[in-house]
Image (tube, rainbow, N blue to C red):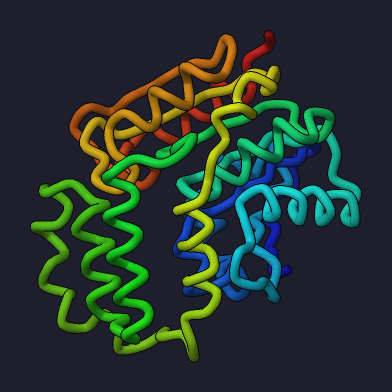
Length: 254
């Protein structure tokens, strides 16, 4: 399992990224992650985990949560704050429900407790592109569905260059993880999550849909829900106060 770490704080923070991890693991991404999340580095030792290197078809988000717990055990990580984004949030739901002693506080962003038509249609479309090896249009479709129109107006000129570098040798990891999204179901597990939980979503999310994030919050007792009405799936990049809001939640005393 590839992972990176940065920061010198006394507390542990686990970050579990989304489905894009199936195209590129955490290996070699320490500098961009440290820049993007540098606000966390003072108070936390931050770990960003990929899925394990070898997975077989049929692997589930619950299996990935079990792997995550094993990795934490091997590294001696206990009482961690956990941030799960998109599919990473699906994994984090199972991790926290199945191993409550491992998670002190939980942040779930742009994720889902199960299936809906939007999620099924989008991920199925990406699976088709991946099977055809159409890396460029997989990246473009992901961007179009993830970012706000204001953001896309600035960056669509870069589309001709997408896919020129970074194409995986094969798409098996992505396909396994994408299929795990299509079978994810944590509805029965959410009620087992008892640690302080912050749930964040975008009011214009065109990947998991607009009802998924509120459903996650509704299933977790005493969770806090924040919705950015004008943003979509990439709220964690586009919302200027995302990191400060998360840090405020993590540092608050219960």
